[in-house]
Image 1 (cartoon, rainbow, N blue to C red):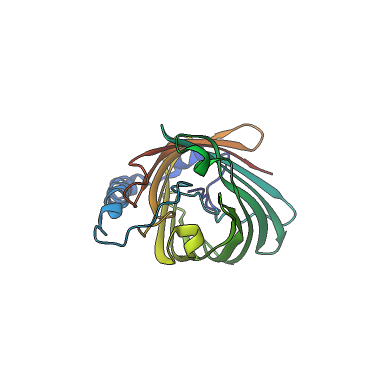
Image 2: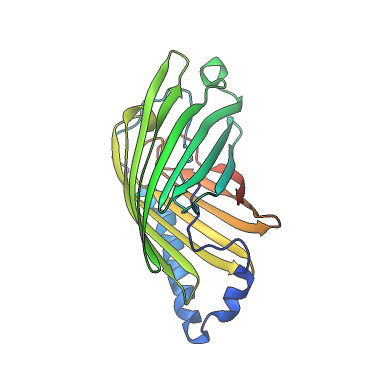
Length: 263
């Protein structure tokens, strides 16, 4: 899932480790280890959930990020989900439309290779994004939705995803924590779904950061995602990691790589 938090700097992260108070190092290590362990086991907690009816199209979709784009600036995200069965492209553009407002457009779930035949041809989802951010010091509240047309072999369907997130930055450790909830309609998730969202972003070494993300639910959006993020010159970032879908039959592990640009 493409989630970058407001307090995760593109440059200068290399200096944050040196600023971390030495008395907090053991606590930070325990916090990181506990959070990663929790995110690793969460997908296995709902073994009796209702199974999704497969359409042969996408498995896990990459959903909107919740980074506040400054007013008048733009952002670009490009991620690929890859395994032996299918390769999927997820592209998003975002614009800071005013104080606390973000608008954007996404071309998601665009298959560029597939072992499922014609039922999984290039049929992307074209979705429009709208977010509102309320900032409270090192915290913020985010409300957003993503809606549009999903292209299926038979016809286009209306897809909708809405979310509410609370975000907290822990300045002493340069850690971001995000907790929230989401709603996805049946066309997007395979069944009408309400679930929870947890995200943790932490420094690893120098400018390298780990983003661990989890959405509950045995559906097409439910998954755990772990990715390492590294800054490049000219406002670029790269990332590599793995997605672990919650839904049986959606693949055990899906490789993820991404390229991101912030103005």
